[in-house]
Length: 582
Ligand SMILES: Cc1ncc(C[n+]2csc(CCOP(=O)(O)OP(=O)(O)O)c2C)c(N)n1
Ligand SMILES: [Mg+2]
Image (tube, rainbow, N blue to C red; front, side, top):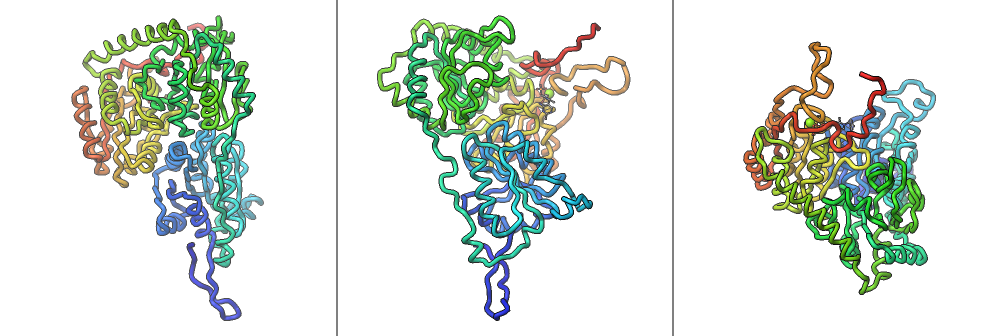
């Protein structure tokens, strides 16, 4: 229990007192939270010092958005809420994008922000960094709380933890006005006011009827398919999920961040036959995957519909912790509501030990497509064009990840994202960390820092040159904490490509184009890390091997053919096109 200097009470007796600073730290520690990602300033500078003095790991960033992204992904990796700590108004706003992104992705995090004086803020009298932060945070997170009195800190922290972790996880905002930190109270009473949260993410057992309905539907399937989402990865029910996939023998598709839940090289993995299995399947079991845009809303041509709105012929089983998820886009025939671990283990019991494997014809058809596409990809990967392109560079990354299956792979960009997702196989759960539901740029260095801090192991970050720019200053953070992160920048001179020209012939370059031949590696040199300029796959391989061996913060500027990418990577079709004839 942290206490401040003893105070002499009127009676002359010495009274141990504590204060808001110490109570927040004690409340977090009591709940097993040992790391804070943040950025100091008024009113939380002393908080960061005291947290470090109390034995917490305090990781300071150069911009709050990166600290917030770090907290969010730490939450995803550990099932403990990641903590992001920011100063009032501008710092808070900088953290807010990460909080909203965490909520969208169902990552548990708590954004703790200092705020200015309530009396002044509420009368809009122009305080230092004045802002009604609670009101602004509310629509962007799962829950938002403010604590005004030291004796309520225990409850405030407990409520934030429960809200972040229970049910569908998400982002929580905790507003701590400056005055709270200095408030004192009797240390013993303070200690008693803290809450160690019991069972913060209670199991939610699915109803037996719902389990039976799901199993009956699966039993009748001729061409079943399982889709694993990042909810399935988050659940940490890895062995049971694998058992369910293997006992049923059903082909499965991992969504991006579910890659590695089973090794991508698993014989039932249908990733390489995605465009075949989605329209062909008759019963699809979604495990922690939502039918949002990433799955074309469960309808349209991707699913065998004739136009973009028509449903395919599939029937769906959806395992989700939220009872409101079913029917969000198309009919869900068998919703299975509960936590994924409980749902999957209930299914395992229900399917028993002699579940019939899917029809051989279906398995063979999937295998044929898959093997054809894998062979085609192998041919492309074997080429060694000059200049290097995404494929020849990623063939190297693929080998390095295979040799280091425990490494986390952070990934953002457009082409740099899509090609990496399809080329680089993952072998272990929760190792692939990427742009998630929103396809957001800027997660790169925040995720990398957190992945290294949380796992203690190596991290490889494959970054588009544009994507990297959103959080690039955090390479200093990588160096400051000496983190084993190897950043590989797929440098094609711009957003999607480096070839656009200004149609007016004016002096400004096109909006998608950057400085040609930029040397991102020199950024790393500036802070004492290892910077490497790589123009061939051999140079890239050597630099990556060395980075993984040395565990030194490394940035490799991989020079990629500037003509190699496509507009928006694989989602070109989402670009609105002008209705006006050219
Ligand atoms: C916060 C945010 N801003 C903008 C975008 C739009 N956007 C999508 S991908 C991308 C960058 C693509 O370029 P790069 O990272 O260099 O990848 P490349 O396709 O060139 O490999 C941008 C700006 C976004 N997704 N998120
Ligand atoms: Mg680029």
